[in-house]
Length: 287
Length: 89
Image (cartoon, rainbow over all chains, first blue to last red; front, side, top):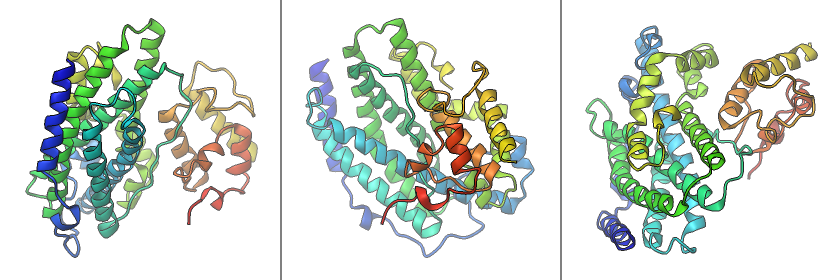
């Protein structure tokens, strides 16, 4: 496993160097975006697959499309700030010798993403504040804590990639929106490939979990998945789109069976990986 | 009026955690895991709805000011709060 693991990481590092770009030169930023353009495709919006979408007039739906994209890019850039902290803590430390070269590229690419997503939000809307709050959680042994932190990164990136892939090729969206999603997907596909290797490696080194450890691990993973999914329902974006009772609207959406179906789609790849790798036996119970 | 609103807060918390029978005024909601990261953000939205004011979370100060029912009463239901949570240059 060791040699194959190192070889995959080296290959991904080389691929990253071969696909290097300067984000400040790569994109052409239009003066503005039209009010009648979809920014988040309707099928990816938080109201999709619910009767609440049908009750919105077209103007409100288009406005919401804009603010949902601002929320998605804001979530992405805040999430990437957290990823940088996790990776920066591990680079060139014991046990992380093999992925450290890749981590250098990872840090550079994540910094680029934070720049271009923040640039988009500042030019055409605004950055929504980070709503992540650190609350007390049961202490896990260090190896399990590290494994969980890399799984969180992987799940976060795979959910984002579900959106990036669809938006990168959606002809209804402005070219700058497609271009940012395409650039992000290109880099994230390597991060996800590396993340899966690292997660498998850390899982193999964990040894057997006691029933208590297993339960605490699943509780924390479930909490992370729920928090991440619910962060797509920022009440501020409903208010910005002109929807009255933004908080009540959010609560109603989260109760819709159609939304659970959509969450299953966002999480599909992560859940399949968790199941096939033997990390989680019943991943459908995570959301 | 103030007491009614703190009762509403307590009712919301007990509805979220039916396994808990009582929450004291000084019970730490975070250290005692009455709120986790998911219920915490929903609690913040509930408090915003109740008070009609945004609660800025980014600094972490706001989260600390929501730790106990007594702190909530002082910081959010007594008309004190506002700009104290803001840090930066």
